[in-house]
Amino acid sequence: MKEYDVVIIGAGTAGLTARKEVEKKTQNYIVVDDGPLGTTCARVGCMPSKVLIQAANDYHRRFSLEQQGIHGSSKLSINLEETMDHVRSLRDRFVRGVESSMPAWSEKLVQKRAKFVDAHTLDIGGELVKAKKIIIATGSRPVIPGPWNEFKEHLITTDQFFELDKLPEKVAVIGLGVIGLEIGQALNRLGVDVLAAGLGRELGGVTEPELQDYIIETLSKEMPIYTNGANLKGINPEGKLIIEVDGNEFIVDKAIAAVGRRPNIDNIGLENLDLELNRGIPKFSSNSFFLEEANHIFLVGDVTGERSLLHEAADEGFIAGFNAVNPVNCFKHRPSLGITFSDPNIATIGQRHSNLIESKAEFVTGMVSFEGQGRSIVKLKEKGMLKLFACKNTGKILGAELFAPDGEHLAHLIAWGMAMNLTVEEMLTMPFYHPVIEEGLRTALRDARNHLENPSHMELFRCQDTPIR
Ligand SMILES: Cc1cc2nc3c(=O)[nH]c(=O)nc-3n(C[C@H](O)[C@H](O)[C@H](O)COP(=O)(O)OP(=O)(O)OC[C@H]3O[C@@H](n4cnc5c(N)ncnc54)[C@H](O)[C@@H]3O)c2cc1C
Image (tube, rainbow, N blue to C red; front, top):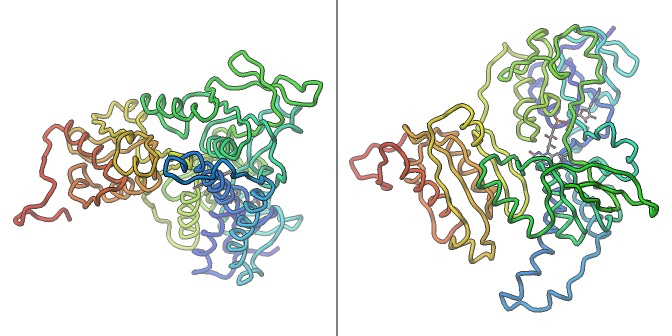
């Protein structure tokens, strides 16, 4: 039986990042993947969804052009088949980018399914192999709730969506987390008749109540948004799907199921390892990523069921790869950062409002509205709100939730400030150009500062002051 130093299961973002660390120390490893290669992110995730959103937002611009004296936009039309071809063409380019690095280590890639036989033995497409260290990086898959299976013909998951040549005329998007919201708004802007139904008011993960209301109210002006869930009721005589939302029935051609993703851990033979499982997931160290009951096995990426984001999968893959071939190290997390590429962007950074309330943290909130904010007016994107949370006593930035023009960039600034452990007052010593969207962030920082216990209103260093760091 072959014996490897490391077997990595899954050639997605987490597995590929782990591989780079592993190969620095050993050539006696393999990467096993039985699925389509190219990563979830590039094939059916981050990248094709962003291409779709870009096309949708570009087309949507036609509604504000006349105001700027640019005429003729009413004659613009869209060919959705061509739009989907464009999405696939760029998607293929991103996939090629991932695959281009593979020939250099192709003899280490085994395109088969892996399953545990015992803690050190894997069945790889019928062949048993031994491994000293094993990294599970098997990702996740879209969930279709059991009772919905009878309507499968009418349901589209993100694994299928980007293959569509024709978009349905009327669609329900069920689930208003990041994925549902992004695809729902994009389809609506592309001219598809969209009914968006989620369960709960946490659109894009936002928990601050005033911001939640503002987001729902604003986005509802574009498409109907429901927050009390949806039931699939049946198929009508014309073969269309009947959906029940808030006690009313709606008829749609298809529904996009965006109600979450399930870790690919239920089908890898974990039952042969005698591990204690919590909702199917073995306990693992969230700083070193080994399993608590089998510390030669690592669990990283979406399969952990925790932070299902590309940059988290990459960080976790790095940590597992490093720890598999070095003495085990404990790694710190970067501040959490989640972005929904709706327009305006939604983002959550650091601690959420609900966590701060739950933990009874003593914090202040700084707020800015982007209605009336200089650069937002210029861009004709005068919608949005940002709430920034800071420790009442020290002024340290704890987190933020936002719905803002160019919010993806504001979110990074806040996260970077947090990574540097900056306080509200320290952030206010940074330069802000005029007129920029970032001035909105400054307004929120100033508002937060005004609520601090002992605020300093000095935004410039005097010559005798010691620089921050
Ligand atoms: C529509 C959509 C949009 C998204 N947008 C964003 C975004 O904008 N930003 C962001 O940060 N994240 C986004 N994500 C999330 C991001 O794509 C994932 O967090 C990330 O791709 C997870 O990487 P991974 O390595 O854990 O899994 P994957 O890339 O899915 O890799 C897992 C691999 O394991 C293989 N595998 C599974 N089981 C086995 C087995 N038993 N044997 C062998 N191989 C196996 C699979 O074939 C697969 O190749 C999005 C996701 C979706 C679906």
